[in-house]
Image (cartoon, rainbow, N blue to C red; front, side, top):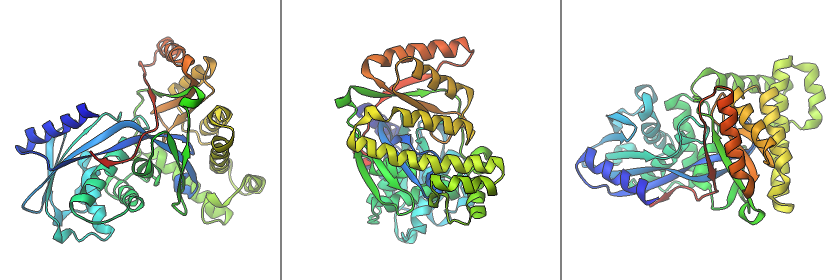
Length: 385
């Protein structure tokens, strides 16, 4: 962590010509299972990863917020009193949106000092690893600390979600921010997205001789584009037609009735959510009883459902999953919002390098760009460094 933390401090000093008051960090996340279930008030099982976003912060003696990043040339600035979603554009909408959202959660923004922020990160962007939530969570924790707002971590997750929904315009659920803020080492966060009750579920991957490999296909996605929104609208339409508050309220036993009522496309979207919620519950039960070696088939089934029923996979994700499965992975699936991004493979330690070599070869053979692959482990959530 020291390198990227030092980079954030030096970047802050270079841009703002002063030393940072403090440094905060928040992780990206891998969603083990439970895809597109969060905004349907269902269940998810993400874990925080060791790749993190760093925020270096300095207090000002006026009411301006200035934001700089290692990934952008310009410095964005706005007076705190001017914060509103319609005035926030580009990459700066993520951190500035958090400041605005804190005001929506009760913070008196007329009584807080301005800040300078510098953002550094080694979470891949567009890979389905929640680089955006890592920014939101790190900024939310930092501002909560220096502005002495006293919000707890579930509330900060809601702040991050509000920023992404309103300031960025991406209709995401609460999962990503919750994982980034609530994660613990060697454990996943089992989150009920209706009650917002979170339970920590130990993964014990190392004890089982297993690792999780992330395969970043390099196919970038954006949740602010239309495919994600269309899937969410389809789920909400299905819930209305079936007379339930959310698809969370359906079980597998309800699918026969749903098939009679819904058009084919909406039915398949609904079937994915209903079966995926059940797969999350089954995965949690398996991790608590028989251990991580018993969840492979659930991961495989999740990918098939995302590919065939929810239709958000792409050729590169399918190839990564199929190649991993053929080369020793216990289970594999696309992860994240879809339409690109990353896949994950749960694999014995002695199969990791074989899987990576095979995927590299398969991508080259198909004329795809070279994927980035790395092993991830479950890490702690957002902290002041």
